[in-house]
Each structure stands twice: as C-alpha cells, then as structure tokens.
Image (cartoon, rainbow, N blue to C red; front, side):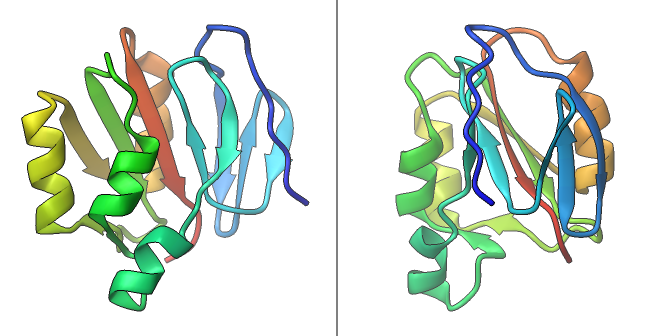
Amino acid sequence: MTKTRNYKHMKPRIDSTSFGSITIEGLVFDHDVFINLNGEVNKRKKKLSKKHFGTSHIISLEEAKYIYEEGAEKILIGSGQTGMVRLSDEASKFFDQKNCNVFIIPTGTAIEKWNKESGSVIGLFHLTC
C-alpha cells in the first residue's frame, strides 16, 4: 500500500526499520521512501534508476534530480540493510555541484542519524539488501 504523509514543515521521526519495512511516525511503509524538506514521505521512484542501470542499487542522475530540492544542505541515504545502494558518478557530481553533502550508510544506522539531524535534510531509505 502506498502512503504519502505530510508532516507540515517538520522532520518526521523514524521509529524503526526491518528488512522490507520502515515505520515513520507510527505508519508502516513496505516500500523504499524518500522524505522531502517539508517532511512529506513519498514512495521512492526506483524506476528512474532501474531503467538506466537495471537495478535500483545505483542512484541515477535522473533520480538524484527528482529527489533534490533547492536549499537542501544534506541528503541522507539509507543504503539498505546490508548497504547495497550507491550513487552513480553522475549523481555524485550533481550533488557536488549543488553543494549538497551526501551521506550513504546502512538503513538501520541511517535512521538513527536521521532522527538526530537538523537543518535542511532530505532522506532516502532503501529497505531491502
């Protein structure tokens, strides 16, 4: 089930994650998510990367442009339970050009970091591998 939730200009708290799910503010999501600067939780559009690389484990320039918002200082990427997700070279250069720091860490650790973060941060969380 796809759920979108807006937390009205606040960063929602991530309660937990396990293989294939993430719980945000008490709601369970069974798909990868990204959280924009306004706190809106959206289903990740993995197909933007999958069509270029045959996998959603490499984030394409197209997906990077889709998730980036002007004013973002950081992108926190939960790279999966065992850390499989990475940026393509083009996506990495794009974020560098935007002066946006990218942190890619396994999803379990990423949610701990997310809950402590402040400032303009976008989150993308891969829930498997």
